[in-house]
Amino acid sequence: MFKTPTVAQLRDCAADLGMNPSDDYLESTQAIVGPLVDAYRQLESVPDDMPAVRYPRTPGYRPDAAENPHGAWYVKTAIKGARRGKLAGKRVAIKDNICVAGVPMMNGASVMEGYVPDVDATVVTRILDAGGEIAGKAVCEYFCVSGTSSTSATGPVHNPRKHGYSAGGSSSGSAAVVAAGDVEMALGGDQAGSIRIPSSYCGVYGMKPTFGLVPYTGAASLETTIDHCGPMTDTVANNALLLEVLAGPDDYDSRQRNVRVSRYTKALEEGIEGLRIGVVAESFGLRESEPDVDAAVRRAAERLAGLGADTVEVSVPMHNMTRPIWIPIGHDGGFVTMMTMNGGGLNHEGLYVGSMLDRAAGWPGRADELADTIKIIALFGYYSLKTYRGRYYAKAMNLRRRLRAAYDAALAECDLLLMPTLPMKASKLPPKNATPEETTKVAWEMLANTCGFNLTGHPSMSLPCGMEDGRPIGLMLTGRHWEEGTIYRAAHAFERSGDWTTF
Image 1 (cartoon, rainbow, N blue to C red):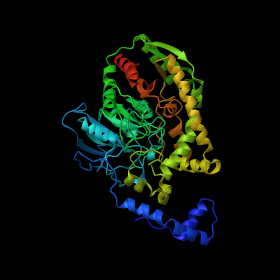
Image 2 (cartoon, rainbow, N blue to C red):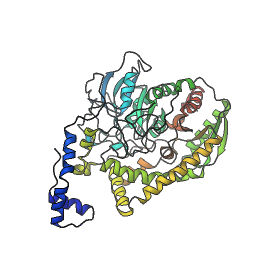
Image 3 (spheres, one colour):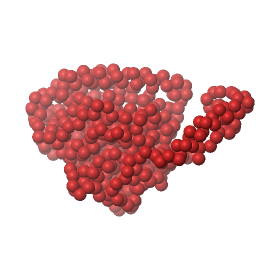
Image 4 (cartoon, helix red, strand yellow):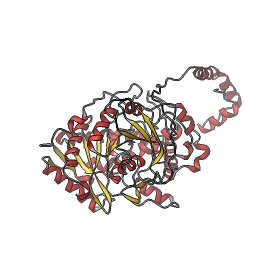
């Protein structure tokens, strides 16, 4: 029951807001807000508007270490969908920031442990409607804020290609269960690269679709203007197939505008003869770049040229500004979305999962349990907003239009842009007693080429293009808005050209 604020509670709120009202003023306020309190109470008596849960399921179970050698599964289950459909016979893992009704969801966070959603995310319903089976929940990083796989409260996720090394984040478990061969398909989320980073580290295929193409309904948000959900798979064909099922308008998600869908599997039948691919000069030779990664990606560009594409060097100077633009949005906006609104976000007319917000709202009483990545974003984001009043968030939001225009200009001359997904191969997992410096260095060191396309909304896919020291190297292809099919054309041709582990 929503309670009328006491004078003492109003005084605390006033202090937080920099006000110093008298007791008489606060007593007047208490009387004035009486009708407002009644409005909140009336809401409690009306059933919420939530989508129905259709397919029967059990809660599943937490697998033991013998059944979960990479630490990639949070819960295993077997939720059967429709008898027929495009995904009949396919098993899909769901990133654990995405709601599956009746199945525990932790979002990588100790403060969320024990939470069980009461609703299916739209993408979960679409998988089941298409005949797919939900195989379980894959571990993700603590509140999904890490590019490495060491921050989940369940423990680190090991790279199936090389134990002891990062599987990438934040969709760490999703990439690992695909790379390990447990499932053919998984769902990931991507706000700064969290589909493409683990796909690159683990050597699987990960697509961050055009912003809004895949509904984000029923998933915990990091920042509503950069939230993306997409497929992570063992092959390009499976990726295109899963996207075909996931894509399309959803009445619950106001992130979507003028959505354009295609038959992505049809694109696999097309060759790449004459396709113009721009190799972005600014994506190589970064401070974090490993020479063997740059070399492998340039060889991949040559291979695409040999397959019939026209590869050319292009320059996008604004690419060097991706991190400075992303950081205020991810940190200031992330603080508001994750900490103030408890992962629900605000200012979008979408589905809000009240039960998830209620559980996440307990974090202030357990704030010392938060992963270092969350603590630092919370501290710095709050400092920035308190001290500079949102000025830098606002300027970054303005500059993202210029960044989008810069990529659009390059894509007016080319069909695709090509870069290393990440400037490096998977790093070693930090030790249990790692310092905050060690934890955050490996969490954020790899974002330079990925985070820009979360800001601009362009579709962007990581595909494996080589391996050194047992660790995969990722090639990233980026296309025009709504033209995922063009990316699939090139990715499929590259995949069929040989065994990437030997390139």
